[in-house]
Amino acid sequence: MDGTIIDSTPAIIKYWELSVHSILDRDMALTESVWVKSSGWITTKFSRMRMEDVCRMEGRVPREFGHDAVEIPGARNLLASLDAENVPWAIVTSGTRPLIDGWLDVMKLARPKRMVTAEDVGHGKPDPECYQLGKRRLALSSSAESNILVFEDAPAGIKAGLAAGCKVIGLATSHSIESVVSAGAHWVVRDLESVQFDKDVSTAELRMKISNSLIVLPIDAGH
Image (cartoon, rainbow, N blue to C red; front, side, top):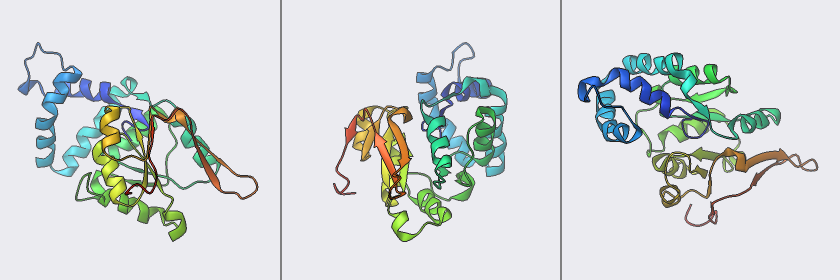
């Protein structure tokens, strides 16, 4: 969700400014570069915490710093178009349920009927477990399942989607274009303003239109 529907980096940085001064110089601002250097420690600490504690901590971020997050351009319209066409979709994320529910409420974004969050899986991306579970929860026919499309911004997430047998659109929102391409995304776009869906009136089939794509790879190129 983060990097594909919203960008909550400023909110997370502000949260950790209040939470991790024990490992930082108190006069040092937690800039994005410092955040990157500290994120390994933070990930390690999270891995040692009980899930209920992680849920409680993550749930605070949207409540206390919701005004610092922004929508990824085109996200709101894309989700609205999927709902308007009755297209089943899900959020598959490494975040916890309190975090995701909080952001959807604060940002007033469309809420999917199905979600896969950190509490639901035992292995993080690039393991495909999360997307495999997402596919099961969508409960599509075998023919429809072959057309599942994943939106991802992180190389690990792109690899997870591919390993789960999905086509992947990579967003160059949080990582370099080169890293998104190297991960193997079939299409690479700057944001969701480049992606539109509509239905063919004669066949009722859903059509995808990608404009201003940065990279397009052949679908059968090893994926």
